[in-house]
Length: 144
Image (cartoon, rainbow, N blue to C red; front, side, top):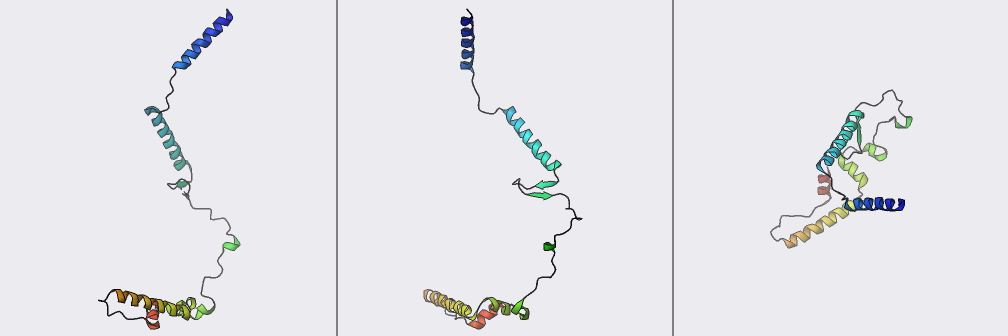
C-alpha cells in the first residue's frame, strides 16, 4: 500500500513537471527592475567615488587635487632646462637646424627627383610651359 502511495505521488509530480512551461524572455517589470538597478549602481559609482568615470568606464579623473605634501622623487626633479647641445648651439636659423639633419647628398637627391617629376608632368601636360626645374637655392628658400 505504501508503495502505491509513493508511486501515485511520483506520478502527480511528474505530470505537474510535464505541464510547466518555462519562459526565457524578460517581462517589462523584469526589464524595469534591471534598468533601475543598473542606474542605481552607476549613480552610486559617480556619487560615492572621488573620481569621474569616462564613458569607457576604465579611465578615472580625480575630483580633488592630489596630496601636495608628498615629496617628489629625486629622479622626477628637473635640474637643467632643455636646450640645444653640441653643434646645434651655434645654429640661428631654421635652415641651419635643417642642415644638421639633412646632408648635402640627401638635399641633392631631393632636387634630382623633384626635377624628374617636373619633367614627367610637363611631358603629359603640354599647356604647362612655365614650370622650371628647382635648384638648391629654391630648396633653401622653402625651408627658411
